[in-house]
Length: 608
Ligand code: AGP
Image (cartoon, rainbow, N blue to C red; front, side, top):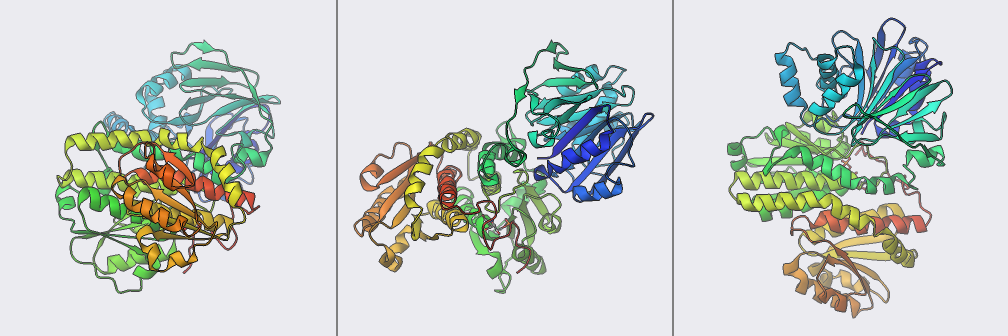
């Protein structure tokens, strides 16, 4: 997720661009840049680092005069954060500048074609391909060049584009990534999101897929991909800036929960080619995959919980032995890493001190490390031998939701790739898993729309003292994450337990009215779980069950049941965790807690 802005009008563009970008830093902040037409040329300033660096470099825009410009604040997906990879990107003649939010999935293929035609690239980004492709198709008609490029690109994009030959025109183009345009006094503005324009206008036009906007200081026109003019209605925005940054949601955490369907899709779609799993960044041949004798997963917090799920998935699907360990334990226990061990370090931030230390410890013992990381160019991403990025976009809330969900997807993709390479699943089974995975975004959406029911239930437990989450197998992993989501933002004590372990001590804590959340998505374990539910209910517990649609037996055993849609037994965590995220969220909201910034916690624990 990145932030783009653009302006054309009577005022100086640079200060307006910088101001707009400052309202979009929650969309990305590892580098930033602006390009302004200064009357003769397109001048550009861009740099790695927060927006502040750019403001200092341009003296708050004073060094870049001009009334037409575009700007960008980046969340890297392709190409590490660097001055060269920062946007805007120009064609060689510096007569076209473009900023982009999204992922061009076929950029490598387009880049190869352009290189064969003599184009030279200076960055590692997918966006630079757009600048050169515009150059390739440009014959004096910007709209024509843009529509031709749109027909060639696959993936998602929100673009701001300026052409040196058309110093009074600003172009905005959209497919799948958000983009809005609006009038300001004496000009027009474009932005990825509402917060960047509210200072100038509350009446905006939402650009729909495959639409183009052409603006000048006094005109605003819309076209479809066939260059036919179209009419659009404006929308009046009545949010304040703070609500706008959260997309109208009360908290970033809820907004990011609702971004899960898209984040999940962004993470798997570039890696599913027909009925094949393609993970280029894995850099492992099928032979190397077959030589893996053990997987060691190391992480902290929710990333560790994703790793526990990974254990069940890799062992169940790929039949590879897996050990999962907390990074803070692993780094000091003189771990034994035999030949053929692949270490997987999972980290949203890529900066968690314990996880980074575990990576270095693994290297010191000669093991190969694969990182599953959300922040491009972070320390763990840079030091791992290979890195598989989750494409969740920036996660602002301290309590992770979308990044965790994307970590699960990354683990499923790896397990499918490993299973196929090791002959553990047939092509038919692989196809079925791929179809199941493609259904997850819509199923998550469905569960999120259940939020009022969860909120109503949560309001009954605002005063709870102890809440237990229990499950068996992969449901134990879900319980771990459900418990952490609740306790870290609501400050209610909670524990996750392997359901079969309750009777070995913890069940003594169950009293009249104690809430027990029983996760029951594994059909072969239903009966065992129902016995555990009966065990705790007879001791006074109130049981919330999370189970698969159609599992009606649970109705008789549990007090309150939440159903998840049908999927295969390995992917249930992606669905069952949704009601548990919502449960923790609404309890925290009901208790008046600071949901996005819980006490004592940091988004990235970069110290021991
Ligand atoms: C989870 O909601 C917390 N934010 C925390 O447990 C987090 O998952 C853990 O600190 C690991 O962070 P990382 O993924 O950035 O390494």
